[in-house]
Length: 77
Image (cartoon, rainbow, N blue to C red; front, side, top):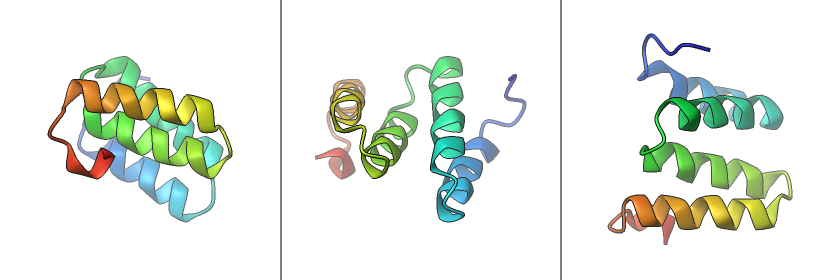
């Protein structure tokens, strides 16, 4: 998917999360990370959703990557 408006896609991922479409939310955040690999917020959001679906090891790895990208990102600590 080509992201024409980056600003909308994190909201879309969060909306899917609110509608209990956790796997849809994971897909959106994975696509965002593919397109914007240095976006620590998308890594953080993906890690949170992965935790919700019980993918704890992957969630931890993604969260560590978010912290590495942006060490001052206090929400990830």
